Image 1 (tube, rainbow, N blue to C red):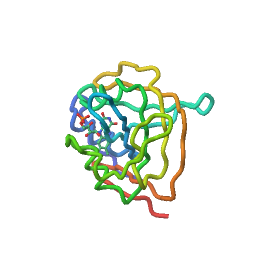
Image 2 (image 1 turned 120 degrees about the horizontal axis):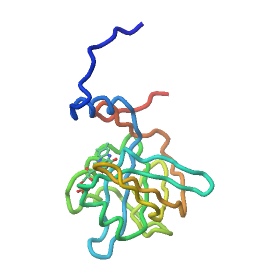
Image 3 (image 1 turned 90 degrees about the horizontal axis):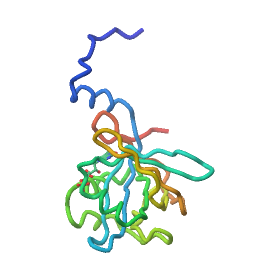
Length: 168
Ligand SMILES: Cc1cc2nc3c(=O)[nH]c(=O)nc-3n(C[C@H](O)[C@H](O)[C@H](O)COP(=O)(O)O)c2cc1C
């Protein structure tokens, strides 16, 4: 049996972040090829599947993200599901560097023209659909146009503010 802990302060944002961090997520790169800025991308832990038929996925970009408005503008984007050995690529794409995709060994997606990160577990090319207002984030629902699976077999995991792996 676990020992009960003291009640946490529900108004404390840092504690709320810590609580949410106990939910492990996979990590994806959301990328697009834009007319004005060329290839752009951001790392997303809030990616989720929504519907099989029709095929829909979703993620939540922050309203402060500078990459999301560029991705939105291009209307098409790619999701690369990062593998456990892509921590450095992930850190680069999560940065504000203008050439953040340089070490991602990307190739252009057939349907989205977006950069697909080399060595990822799988790729999903999408078109932006409904966008919902959700506090300090947006919820973006996207139509899936194309998908593919790569040879890597273990995902990169984010848990309690750190990268982690699954052991099988
Ligand atoms: C593991 C991980 C998960 C993240 N998940 C999200 C997310 O779900 N939504 C989001 O807006 N930013 C998320 N970020 C932050 C962005 O990837 C990135 O740091 C930020 O978008 C870069 O700033 P920019 O959008 O202004 O280029 C995450 C970062 C990491 C490292």
